[in-house]
Structure formats: structure tokens, C-alpha cells
Length: 348
Image (tube, rainbow, N blue to C red):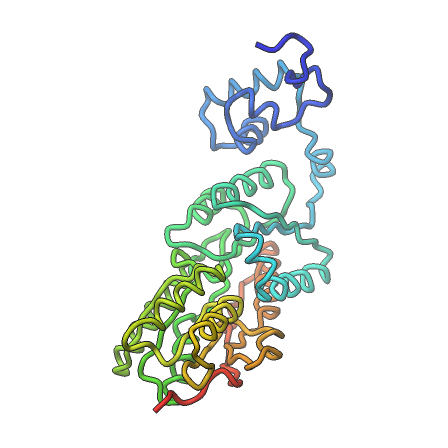
């Protein structure tokens, strides 16, 4: 046991924090917030232990002066549970956030943005925000199959917009995108050029929108009598390079490759060059996401342009409609394939 007044004693080293209470109680900071605010989500025994320890440490939550005595925070929360290098490199996130903020700022709202290491950490942040009354609503990106975040927020009945989801309830709505239709648009482009062997290097395959794309790719290639194969790239350049090398090292290598992001497409093109092959003479390349880099790289990259700024505006607009208890509109999220230098008819 540390001596009384030792630095490890939170009560003796200065201002006690919620993390000190959580550490002493052996729980998460989210559980402390729930217990202190009388919210469901912790057992009676845990709540009693947390309250006792908080009293012993003489800690009480400030909660920004109780959110100015009931005044709404005028803020929407978004947590990004993606690797930092992915968020920093993919153009989608900057464009999406620009679209969200452009709508929110016009109505006097701010965007409360935070990074998380995984889904559990993201849910923990959601719980703290809700307990502290820090945000009016929450945006959720990249919904997963059986997503625990969506289940948790829906159970709490907190205003939530799921981007790319398909669920709707009193407090939860989704910005829908027909990923299957968009994937078929890419296959249409490649088959129209004469390709009969197509490889698809995907993002994280637990994402529901990636699963929809994979299913559409399988169905569409079978219906067309086209050979199609799928490998995971997880939005990580090194994994995209490994998947590209594996596909192009096969005896009947694909003549076209589709990547779920422009970062993976660029990594794949580097691998194609390392293998002594040329784009598009030997292999055509399509990126699911468009960016300025796709337009200036040599060869320029054929890409699906789906306007992430507009997607962000739709998400923010639906959130404001949800908060105002207005009917929520679900306009179609469309996209087109912009043909550039990276696609051409397959080699004879």
C-alpha cells in the first residue's frame, strides 16, 4: 500500500478525476458517469461501490456546469474508430467531415470529433458523452454486422444517424447508400471494356457496406459469366499490396482489379509495377473512392465518384431533422465511374 500522501494517492496529488474513481472502483469511466447520473447500465452493487468511492475521494462531476443548467450543447458527436494512418490518408474522411460541418454550422451546431482505438472504446466514448450531456446526437460511421454500437445507442434511445446503415426507429435513422448498385456500375465499366477476369480487393469485411459490395460482386460476376475473386485489403496499404501480389501471381491472373479506396489502389499500382506489369496495358485498376490524387497520378486512376461532401451533408441534415422530430428524407446517394488512364481493354 502506498504511504499516506504518496503521489499515487489521487486525493493527495491534486484534483481528483473521473479516471481516478474508475481506477479505484475497477470499472470504466463510462460506468462511473452512468452511476453518478443515475442512468441504467450498471448494477446496483456497482453503482453503490462507485458512489462510495467517489464520496471517499470527494469527487463530483462538473459536466460543464450541468450543461449550462439544461441548455442544449448544440453539438453532434462523431467517433472515428479507424487506424490513424487510414483516416489521415483517405480523402473520404476530410470530404465527409467538410459536408457535415457545413450543414451544422449554418444551424449553430458544432461537430464534436474524437478518435478511438476500437469499437469498445468508441462505445465507451458514446456513453460518456450521453452521461455528461455533451452532445445532442451521435453520428456512426462504418456500421458492422451485428454492430454493438448501434444496439447500444438504440437501447438508450439517443438520437443517432448511422451512415451506410439500414435501421430506423424513433431515435435512430440511417443514411442509405445502394452499395450493390454502385459495385455493379464498376463491373459494368470493366465488362464493357471486355474484361472477363476481375479481382476485388476489399476494405474491412466486417463492415456491412463492404459485405453488400462483396455479395453484389459475386452475384453480378456469376450472372455475367465473368470470373471474379475477392481478397481482403482492410483499407491498409500493405495488405492491399500483399493481396495484389497474390492475385497477380496466380496462373490465370485477373486482367482488372477493383480496390475499396484510392489509397489501396495506389499501393496496388506500386505492386503491379514491382511485378514488371503495366497499368492499364497488362492490368486495369479501378478505385472505389475518387480524389485529387487519382486525377494527377500517372497513370490517372479510374474511380467511382460518389461525392463524400454530399454524403456528409445528408448525414447532418438527417440528424437535424431527427432532433427537430421532423419527417426524415432519404434522398438517393448516387455515383458515377469516371474513366481515366488506368482502365483499358484487356490484353489480347
